[in-house]
Length: 270
Ligand SMILES: [Zn+2]
Ligand SMILES: [Zn+2]
Image (cartoon, rainbow, N blue to C red; front, top):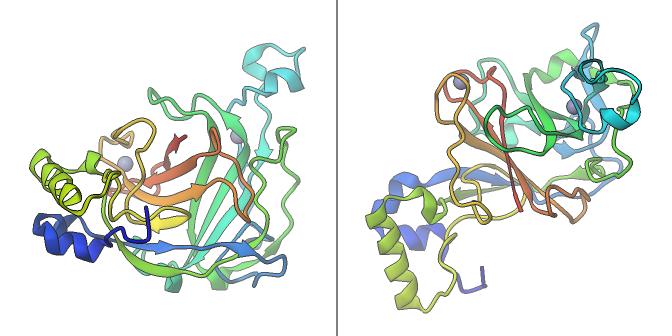
């Protein structure tokens, strides 16, 4: 988007039918901070966990396991691997998320390895993600075992603090019914805007709001229970967190609106 691209509010004023697609979102704006507040919203950094509870491990098969332990038969090659902290979010920084009763902190953990069979029929090749909705008062600093991981550091986030910014977000045109999509296209033409596909949608690390479909066009992300999942988090490649997802693209994490305990939905664009 250029500096002159209209924001979500201006778009809704021009195309009122968009109003019901407005979703609150928090842009995270991460910046390198090796000493970020352990209990504050952040990316990477030290682990927090309830005392006495085991640290989560990934037990999925990793394509790289074939190289790590080639002498075992394929069905015995999955190596349980400690997850690592990807992001920690305090409820006050993203109040619009679907916080379960009593929870005030979301930990996003992931397995810093590639996985190729964790999303059922849907194609996916990237890290496995777990969401833990917790109470800050029940957590203490923890020292998880080091993760087994690929040689590359693509999936090891550099510690960052955040500058959360609340915005209203609009979806890519893929998500809109034809008449609204056409109305946006006409508005863009009147304004001389060439790339109108994602007008009103914010890029970068983001909680809530809408995902980008810039590579594949819209792919419905359905939970195993049948519900259409909603966008929770966009993880962006590059900049201070220093991650690289897909071809230096972005990872989208989705949650089930029926039950947050259902496994997260995952999709990588680009
Ligand atoms: Zn794994
Ligand atoms: Zn579900």
